Structure formats: C-alpha cells, structure tokens
Length: 317
Image 1: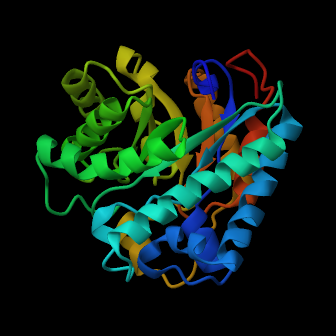
Image 2 (image 1 turned 90 degrees about the vertical axis):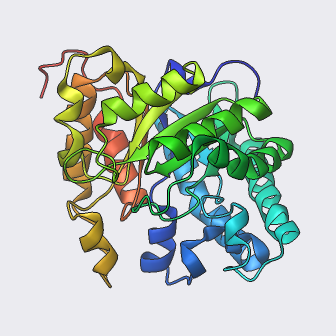
C-alpha cells in the first residue's frame, strides 16, 4: 500500500476477537491463546482465510475500508519455546501470516475498497496483566525483532494491541520507528477506564507521545466494554483526538471474571452497535471499528450497520 493510511480520514472496519472466536465458537485449540499456530498447517491456514473473508465482504458491501490484522499477536520471540517452536520457525509463521493477508488483499482490493495490512504486535506477557515491567530500552529491543520480520514480510503498518503499560507501548513505537512503519497503539483498559497499571488513559497517551515525538499514527482502546471507558472520552480535551479506534469486548465483565470463565460471554451485538454509535457521535474522530474478546462477525456487523452512514447531527437517535 502506498500513501497515507486510509483510516486517518475515512471509516474502516477490522475484525473481532480472533482467538476467542476460534476457541469458543469454532472449537479450535490455540495453545497459549496463540493464533499464529494456525499458519503451521494447510487446514489452519484455510480456517484463517474462512475467518477473514466474511469481514472483507462486510466492509466491501458497506463501502468502508478494512484493516487486515495479522494472526501474530502472540508471536514475538518469547513465545517460541512455549509453542514448541524454534525461533526461525516462529519467524516463518510471522511471514506466512503477512503473506496470507497479501493474497486476500489481491483478491478483494479495488480502487474503491482500500485494505491495509497490519502486523499485529502483542505484549511480551499477558494482555490483561502488566506483569514484570521492562524499561523502554528493553521493550524496544525485545519488540524490534518481530517488527523487522513483519516489515520485511510487507506489512503496511504495525498495531500494538492490548498494551498494558506505558513502557512497553513506547518500546513498540520505537521499534516501529526503527523499521520505518506507521504504528497504532491500543491500550487495554479496566472497568474504571484506566490501564491495568492504574494509569489514566490520558496520561498513557501523552507519555507515549512525549517519549516518541508523537510518532504513533493514532491510538486505540481494546479489551474493555464501552461502558468501561465512554465517560473517559467525554472530556473535551485535545488528547482524545488521538483516539481513533475501538476494539471493545462484548462482555461487561472484568478481566479477572473473564479469565475465570469456561464459557464465552458474547454480550448483545445489537446493543454493542448502539453503544459504538453513541460513542462516535461524541467522538467523531474515531474511524477504526472492530472487536476484542468475545466478539465475532455478528458484533462487527452490528457495529458497522449502526455506525456507517450515521446522521451527521450528534443529537440524532
């Protein structure tokens, strides 16, 4: 893809909660919650293609753009050993993940349907728990390896999803800067609208921007229900304009409650769509719409149908 990211000036969709969809809805075992293993077999690759296609068809039908997010969220170097892979094998799966997205873009993209290929970078540890902190230098050094692999494979951008703390988010941004790719940073939020570290979202955004010369293309919110963070974004402050994407959870449960569940709380897709629309009426700069834990095509469809071509009047129902 050449030129500026289309999501900077138009509405684009992305997918839902890939891992929870595969595990709970499709009955596919993902060791360590790592969807990257699907690229290791023809069957798994076909399953990923089947997962992405309906999202692409939805976006094309509604006239939005689309961000194809790679299945590499849990595919940074530390995860090779737990997945029973050699580092070179994990690198190969990262490359295969981007190759798959290029093939899908070649099939679906047109002059009126823009598709962005995003290399997904997840946290070194857990997406709910900040765990053991790295300093910024260590975080940049750790994430640089995967950033280089994804960039060389042909990703248009990087997306740092489920970031739980400022240091690691800053490190990913510096790694993206090193490889010359734009990057979006998406923070995990708790039920109080703060990061798992307790940092307010405003402080996290401003800290990363300050440390990186405002390098991120934009920020996103993920892994929280809109009820958990809507009030935070009601502030009339300049920093909120940096929030351009939402990948919300279907459930209102806390992360601790979700971790303890053996069944999926899929929430109410139609209600979720209404909540997204209400959010966009107050924060019209938000242009990237997708889902996180517990969401699937039903939820993204409901969100898209509620938000695409919504009335310009912020008081419209």
